[in-house]
Length: 283
Ligand SMILES: Nc1ncnc2c1ncn2[C@@H]1O[C@H](COP(=O)(O)OP(=O)(O)O)[C@@H](O)[C@H]1O
Ligand SMILES: [Mg+2]
Image 1 (tube, rainbow, N blue to C red):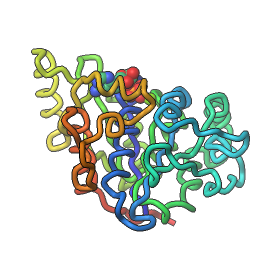
Image 2 (cartoon, helix red, strand yellow):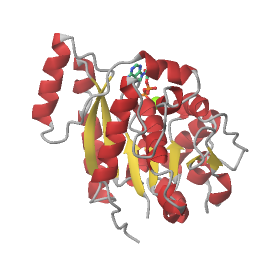
Image 3 (spheres, helix red, strand yellow):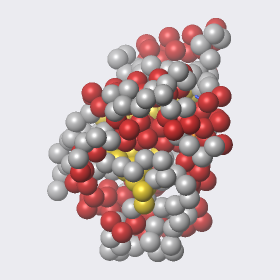
Image 4 (spheres, helix red, strand yellow):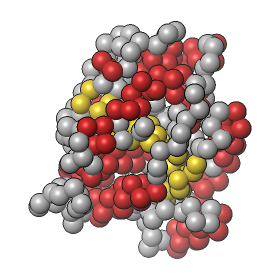
């Protein structure tokens, strides 16, 4: 049974997509030598706006109309998910479900009027739960049905937080949404951690913000991801950072290079591997 992890924050531009892409790629690299499903990772892009970035990092998954993520969300019964899976360009054991921006926008509009509109992603992913070790879900920057579907489908949430005062102040609505999802659908949904992103630690106010986050979320503050040009360059080069700045000799137990963000995202990958375990899901 796959471990399902959603990357969520109702704010945009806080590093959700960067974290989803690099976590998924890092997990794929670390698990590359495991046979079969134990070595496979699936990345699901639930952000209509995020598609360009996702496509960039994964070649260009082409979505046939009616055979993409949006069809999984709105059609009753949903089409089969297996034939949709596409292999990423850089990692043979990393897969994506293609999606199209316009169709996802349309799906977001249609969902509130549909039956079982909160549980559609969870249901659609059920047939492939045995085929992957991890399913990483990138989410949109708002609290609509696409986010709720992403949380209902998740065992764990990672919350990237931009280390600025504005970044910290916006987390209350997300917390409320997570509480609601726990109450109605997923009592075992766990916050894996708050991940400080775009961190510039030399700045005084960033130190203060990290301190505040540590107090607010004891034991839940993850090691920060610093601001790094390599992450931006990797993106514009259509790559995850492990592919963009590879080590001289790649081994499954050592996926990072001299580039700082590879070390920081590798640490997140290892934390996830150590911390997560399959949670039995209700039938
Ligand atoms: N740690 C970082 N250092 C430098 N640039 C980053 C970092 N994290 C994200 N970015 C850049 O910031 C922008 C927003 O990040 P993104 O992951 O798309 O956020 P979100 O998905 O939350 O909207 C992107 O252009 C991305 O390349
Ligand atoms: Mg995004």
